[in-house]
Image (cartoon, rainbow, N blue to C red; front, side, top):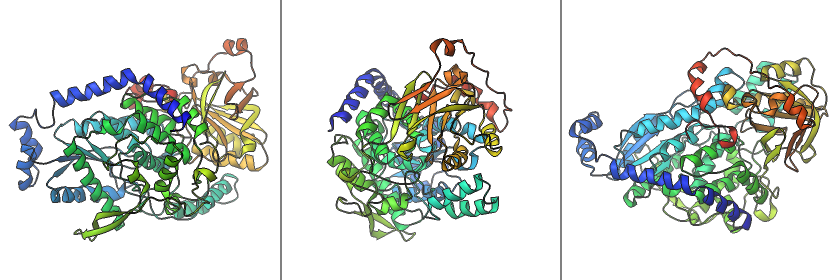
Length: 605
């Protein structure tokens, strides 16, 4: 094991001793005092099986076989989740063939950041993760399940599901994705048209044509944003089958992997391998390493902290920073390159990634996963084989030998030929607080930006200033009062195209915000997740137009050229008042309770 990675692991284990012990004790109490189905009266159980097929009522009531609780994020508006409509019946069929049963335990909301980007609904996006966690817990609180199957894909859904499922960590759990859509127009072309639209060079019809040519069918969006980073992380954690993340939706192999997932979670139940045995300090480090090696979404500097805390594990931004300095960048996938996740899969995907990271001593070997094997299983790729199911797909998988070579070195490389010697997520600290930056998609000449700032309290005000040509200069754009306590910490992805236009005009520009950027954030230097946020008296709330701000991703500094006395004497402005429409008024309790971004911006722990 590489020394730097072992050092971070040791630090996480040390600081997590008390909360991890408390978490495991909670699970033991649950298992001992409230065993699944063991506490239900006949009346309770009658409600459980009332709607079940007659031949399943007695087995479920008597505990004659494993009963799988399905938690689903299905809806038919969102492309990533629409394919999940058929999954419950498919899972039930496979479970029956193995002498088990399955029931839909409950559904969770699934909202799309792509739909709400730049709109008021985005202010509920991050909070939806905690709602999903609670919805998952409510689904499983009926306490009649021996195993859990989570059906979800996108940005807040998977983190929320695993946070909720970890409260039932004595049970085995498997995550079953739906897969990406096939590739549409190139990500580079999509980004080009977006910038043209921002510059007023093409009309809305041209923009709509480009967007619908990119997002064109059922399945997950193909860029490597938060949704697809979720999938990689679930594999790296060991809660999802190997190389399942980027198998296209609606294919025989996709169905075969779903069937195999059911078989594996039943095997785990028979061996009493709970989710808590899979999600450990070491598997969390494996997930962090995988994220960094692929240039994954900055949203996971929030989500992984929250997931870890749900398992009694304390991960910090310093851990991200220290690991990022030690883990090489092995993949170039949009927005860190022009390829999409289908190209990444074709180049060798997660199987080759795991092989290389293991070879370099960057992954912990002594972890547990849903395959019931070591990490050897995660170096292999699946192919369908065996008996045919009623829908024409195969129910069995044949696994390839280990993938030991990249099939496209423009997309995926070995450790020896890495695109960069570090992962590209860095922590900044200084008199403006802390912030995260992602430099893997930012040209080296823009890693240090020092300029007078222009301050806004909403993204719309910034967009208006751009449209009025007020930002045509070297500038650090400050967009504050976008933190979790202010308005739920929306993504500010709509700011990327105009900032990119300014940069292409020859100006040095950067974004400084206590809000989030999308997992698709790209070539602009963006210091995000500033903590403390403006709403909680952070110094970002004291900045004035013209202050000289420095964002230095090389030395890890975030500062304004003001004396301590001047900063201390300045008042923090009050947050702008906004109408609480679209249900936002229901989330006052979340905004009041939410932790800072540096703790995962959650309301539960």
